[in-house]
Structures are given as structure tokens and as C-alpha cells.
Image (cartoon, rainbow, N blue to C red; front, side, top):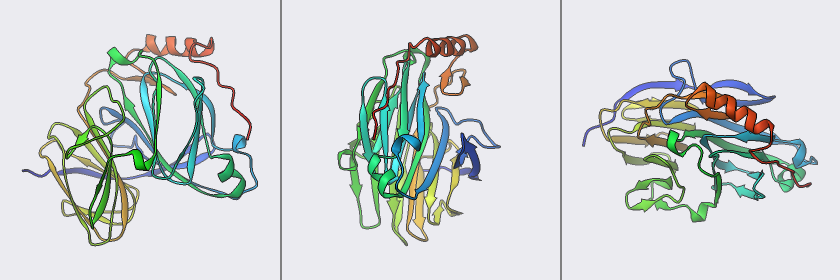
Length: 288
């Protein structure tokens, strides 16, 4: 097998998203997206306690045309939406939402986390949807860690959220071929990853120092690979956590505006109008 060479190692940038400071590895100064992946945000927030969940996090907002996916690493995330879902996803779990033709949701810490205080850490990334599926009905899938296929080894733990990897099928439904993994590698551990040569591939390191294909990568670095091989070798210099996003490019025009990702400007205007007249649902959040 041949090795996927590294095209670029890109440090995350701090950005302010509506008053929330987060690390943003994608988009960056080198690329706006890596088809089909549109955005990656890494948040780690500390709550001091004696607060209300409804006063924290991100309040109700609409989406259309893509899948916002959240990997929870510490604390929890409470999801409420216009379809009536009200679910708390805890550390190790995944919140998968296909926005389809429209959904309105909020993302906040649980009432317990807000009241007792603690750390909330998660990564949210946006996965584009091919044009023919953008107006499918929305759906929401919460995954617990124990419901996520797990590859266990002395050196690492690897979880398959979507796609097929080494005989394990991720439970999340995707609309184009991809493999989405999250994992931990222990200090001095080794991990060989094998993915299709034609998949666009990114690795993001949350914490720890890792050598990837003989290149040392620091915490909060995004590693962008060339499509010239299938193998990646990770060697941990310290305990590390990471995500791997790899997928076949959709190769369609992308037009986005805020929470909407479509193919044309006309479709964006239609999304804005539909949201304003309530076609993406109305969210009435429950109290703590």
C-alpha cells in the first residue's frame, strides 16, 4: 500500500462566533472547504455553575442542505428541535442531524451541567449533501459512545461513526461515500489508518503531540492529505485525541449563507424565505 502524503499542516485560528470563542481549523487561509467537508469548529467552554441551560450555548436557529455533526468529548450537549426531539448527548457520543429541507434546533449544555458547572468540549463539522438529496426530510440521530462501533487495541481506541472501516459499519446515514472516525491514541502508541486513495482526507488533533507519516503535528493542527495513497501512520508522542474526516468529493457548486448550504443563489434566497415564514419549523424550548 502507498502512503497518503501530507499536503499541508494548518494550525487552527481563534474566531468569535456570536460571542463564543472557538478554534476553527476549517475554513482557513488555504481553503474554504475540502469537499464534502465545509467547516470544523472545536469548542471548549467552562461553566462556573448556578446557571440556566437556556441562557447558555446556541439558541434556536434553522438549517437546510447539509448535515451538522457534533462529536462530544467532555460534558454534554442538549439538542432540541422543531420536530420535538429533546436529547442530551454525553461525552463519547455523537449528535448527527441531517438538515434536509429544513429544521430549527438549539444546542446548549444540559440543565445539570449548567447548574453544577464543568467543562463542555465538542467538535462540530458540516458535511455537504449532494443536490438531489438536499430537500429530503430532515432527521436527527443521537449516538451514545456504547452504540458506536469500537475498535479497541492496547495502543488506541477507534470509533466508527459513519461509513465502513475494517468490517465495522458506522450507524449514521450519509448521502455520499465517506468514513468518519474519532479516536484516542496512547503515548508511544502506533495506529495505521487505511482509506481510499480518492477520498479527500483530514485529520484534526484535539490534544497531544502526534507524528503522522514522519511529520510532527501539534494540538489543534489540521492535517490535509494529498489523494496519492491509502495509508496514514500515526505515532503518539503523548496521549492524544483526534478525528478523521474522509470522503469522496461531491464535485458540485456550493453556495452558502449562514446556516444554509445549497447549490445556487436562488436556492439560498428560497431557504431564507422559507425560514422566515416558518417552513423549517418552530422551536419552543422547554425550560430547565
